[in-house]
Structures are given as structure tokens and as C-alpha cells.
Image (tube, rainbow, N blue to C red; front, side, top):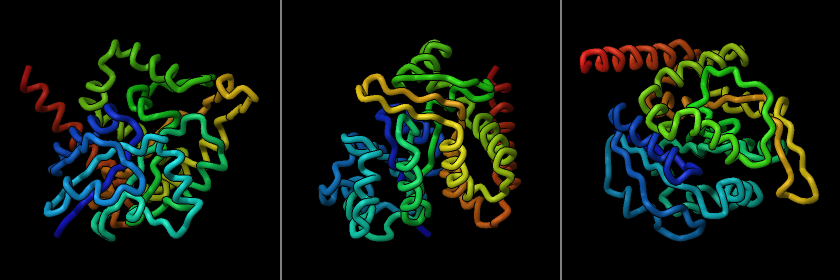
Length: 269
């Protein structure tokens, strides 16, 4: 039975490279088109995906006007499905995930977008606060931070890892997923991880403060909440979330993978 997954991401390097490597080591065939999504361009994905069977993950970068505007476009026009916007056959993908940075968006935007994209079969929004680079910032218990531009935070993380943040994330992915999985389980008191994407929206809107100024370049965000739910895409794609009470199943999977990788690394030394 085909198991085809679509990941729509924001970045051109970090997200595609991380999730390509991770899904490959979990047994999926991965395809990363070079082109960004161009909303309304017919058949743009067909040359990469049609005719492929088995466990396939297509990781594609969002449109040039940012995934935020793309999601709001679909939200404003209920007649435009995600299949129509991306020009692929209805139900070709069994699961669709939109990996999205919180960035400087207003709380209302997050609520509106998630109200439309809350089901993995039709598209589920998976937020990272403030961005995917939070994966390289895990277990730091970072305190309140003010950033006018998200690049400030990204630069801080990359400087911390001396330019090796991406390789660190890939190498320690299971450990990172366990950290955020356990963190969110404790904060949300929810053992069905498929509920975590909605709960992180509420947490972000409660704790992060966006200050919009007349001069947009001077606007800033006070970040008080650093977390992610990207583990949902992995767990759901692997069929680990069929049971409603699935937290321990998912935790066990990442724990075993982490131990197995550590054992391999020890043998290489």
C-alpha cells in the first residue's frame, strides 16, 4: 500500500536537508524538487512523484511570497483546495504537513491558518517557535528574548554551533525529538500527540508578544516560548499515531532509534 507524504517547508536548505536525511534513515524514498512551489502552476509536482509507489516523502519549498501568504490565500478562499493550489491529484498524498516558522506573525493569523490546516489528510500546520533552528537550541531553557528580525535568532544559534548547526540537528535528531516530545507532553498534559499542533498554537499566542510599529522594520517580537511539534510528521508518517493514546509509543520509537545510533557511533570509534 502506498504511503506518500508531502512536506511543505519554508527554508531552501535547513528543512529539506534535515528531513530528507531523517526520512531516508527511516526507510522512506525522498524527493526534494529544486523549484519552489508556484501557486496555480499546473502539474508542477507531477514530474517528481507520479508513477512512484511505496513509502515516498516529497519535500518542497513554499512559494516565493512565503508560506504565510500561501496559507492565508487558501484560508480566504475555501473553494481553493491545497490539491488545486499545488496542482496534484486529489488524495495522491495520504498525509500532508506544512512545517512553518512562527516568525513575526500575528496571533490571529496562527489561529486562522490552523483552523484550516488541522488534519494531516488534508494538510496539518506544524509550528516551530520561533523557527526550525530551535532544533539546534534544544535543552537550553532559553529565557525571554526580543528580536526585530528572525535572522538575529538564527545567527545566534549558528554561531553557537560554529556553522555546524545543520549537521548537529541531523546527528542528534532523535534526542532532540525526545526532548520536545517530553517537554510538550508535560506542558500540554496530552498523550495524543496529534493534539499537540493545536496546543502549541495556544501556547505561542499566550506567551509570545508581537509589537507592530508604524515602521514595520522596527516591529519586534518578544519570544517567551521556544518549542516545536515537527515530531508529529515523523510519527504520523510511520503509523505510530493510530492509537489515540500514543505518546509512549512515539517516545519508545525515538528512544530506541537514539540508542541504536549511539551504539553504531560507539562501534565506529
